[in-house]
Image (cartoon, rainbow, N blue to C red):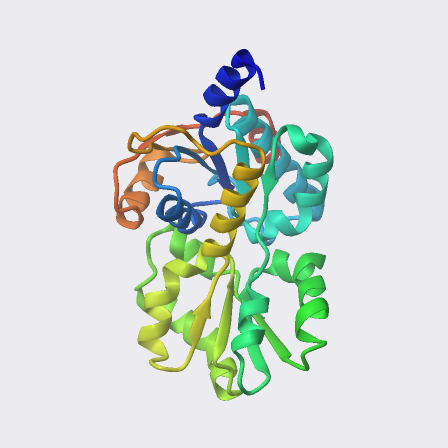
Length: 290
């Protein structure tokens, strides 16, 4: 590598990591990224104007995800983490084909493998969104890992849970009632390992443990995707050379004030927040036709 190449690569390696989710749930992944790579700066994009993705059509999910990733690319990010299970299920292959090796795209895989490895009674549960259950990624992982191991996978979903997290109402009576309704059948079936198949759901962990003490062992993909991101950045020589404290810049497509209030309660560090307006044309069209 020439001195010029080394200088250019050094500048690019100090660029931020882009992280995208349909809402604020992906901040659970950001926490794992910052824990593993404390000097990496992050631009976090939450498409709060269109959350949740799970109830949207396949084409909508792919379009919204593609627009978000392209915006992060335009902001100078060196790689992007699609911190949304639904978006990963429908968009990863398309994004990787589009960007190739010039812009690494890392996605989420539901934590079925560790759940299967830990299961003692050959039963695991997956709490996911409608979109994740509809996509092929979770089905493929179950077929590849759970079926050969003879492990039964019981899937459940609720469209109400993501909005509770988005509103900061994880401990509300209504959220408790919905969690009880959705998870009681799993508890009654003897499920102990519960895969949280949405990045919003780690923020429900405390509520789940409160309602079902000593029942579920909760597993999510946050730590695994952080490790994979570190491996990918190392492979492309993109790990930061900075020793400064990292920065977290948050952008939302919806209302800044309401998002900021909830993020303050979820993020235990300083951050900035602003509005990303790259989807105005789509939003205007949607409001006229919806």
